[in-house]
Every structure is written in C-alpha cells, then in structure tokens.
Image (cartoon, rainbow, N blue to C red; front, side, top):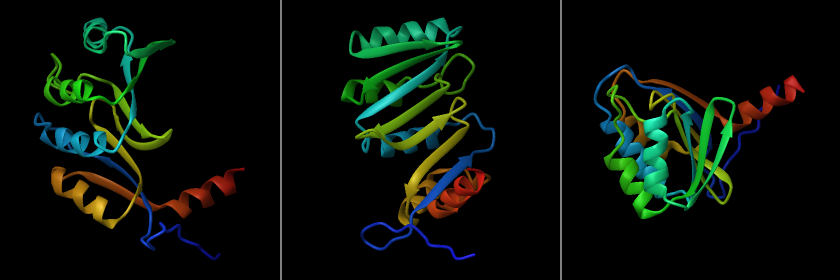
Length: 164
C-alpha cells in the first residue's frame, strides 16, 4: 500500500496528536496549553454536564449575553467568541470544587476549523494538524508520564476510507 503524507504549504508534515496526562493535582500544563491555543482561536464551545448548575450559572454570569447556549440531553453547550475577558476567566478561574478543571470539554476553533480540544475535565486532549515544532511545545509543558498518540493526517484518511 502506498502512503501519501499530508504536508503544509511549507513542506512540513502534519500530524494529529491525542494525549492524556497522568492523574495529578497540578494543572499548570492546562493553563500553558490553553494560553497557547486560545491565542490561535476565534470561537469556542464549552461543554458542561447540565447537572453542574454552579458551573453553568458562573459561565452565564461571566459571558453575560455574549453566548449561544444549547442544551442537548444532559449537556449544556456554550458557544462564544474568544475574547480577552473569556480567556482571562478560563486561565485564572479554572479549578472547580473537586480540584480539577471546571468544564467537561472545551473545543477551540478558528474560521470554523478545529484548533484544539480539552476534554474530560482537562484529562484528555486533541491537537489536530500540528507539526513537529507544535508537538515539541506540547511535550515540553506536559507531565513526563503523559501518554501521547501521534499519527499522520493521512493515516486517519486511510482509516476513514477503509471504513466507508
């Protein structure tokens, strides 16, 4: 089977990166990752379990009327522009009562294209379309025991083609 690897316009290979840090009570890595990717996004979706009423009320208060909220089954989804005020809140008031990231998932995008995912209260991440330099940054801020799954974009295309 011949593989063709997806490259950016500058010739660098493009990878998909899924990673999970070990359990820890220090989320400095989360702040570093979010700082990096929030600066590259213009929109975000914040997902909370509907039963997390305090977290939802806090978001409604912080976001005021600058968001669209969608309730799907047991999830409340906030769609909001990435603004300095929202970024400040995410980076400075991110730990909940249980000592973990407050929000179940945060999906960042720019021009409707996925930039970064923080999922399961900051315990799983996905960075699409990254190059070696971006991977080096990510690995430099993550705990040493982080589990990384790196694959080339064309590998995903091949899997999808085989499933169709």
